[in-house]
Length: 282
Image 1 (cartoon, helix red, strand yellow):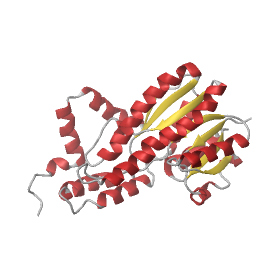
Image 2: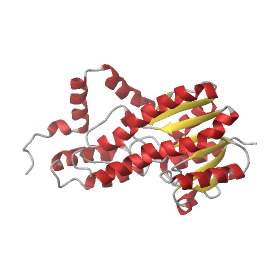
Image 3: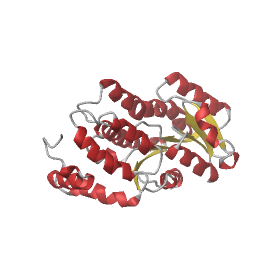
Image 4: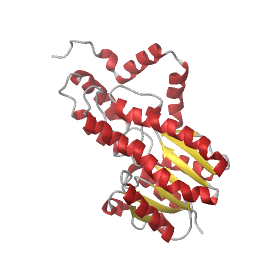
């Protein structure tokens, strides 16, 4: 029998690429999204080993129904890829509380909801893999990405705790840290930033937005993330963390080794925000 893997947020981008890649690698993939209509692009792909699944990670009843459907199909769930996420952008001061909650409901509580629901059967079989899709932003928080970055910092901590708790039960946990990836996610983040181009941080947002707009379109495709997920699912001793593309390791080294003041100056220069001077707005 093919090993079963559940991929959340599979309607586009990293989730879609991961579902297709894993299916071609021989896994039976349950590709989940809030609406089955959003999964139409997966129809006929993955050598017939992809099953679309309607599931909202913020709704525990929806999760229970989806996992029951997986169980009814036969075989215990071997892998869980927690990919579903949203990207709230904007100044920490100006992002409304509702958007903070929306960010955490999906990226943090949604991940916890699905993981908690899937774990009993993994522990019962004494094996399994949980792959959490984090972000380089979980270690490096650039300006105007504080809401999103803080949610990914939370995923870092959750992944560490889970890995240590589950090791005695035969369940291994890995975190994937993508940097810029060429997916529709970048356009969504641009739309989020646009909402703040008339506020107190307008001039800074315009500068940052111009830098950010170049990141995703010029980046590697989502297959690099899908390959890292496959490695984490199949390696005898998977890494606790995978950073993709690997060139992002340099930025992490900067964050880990350089003084904060130096890191701040470098990121201001990289993003172009060193050109902003208070009072320079017209």
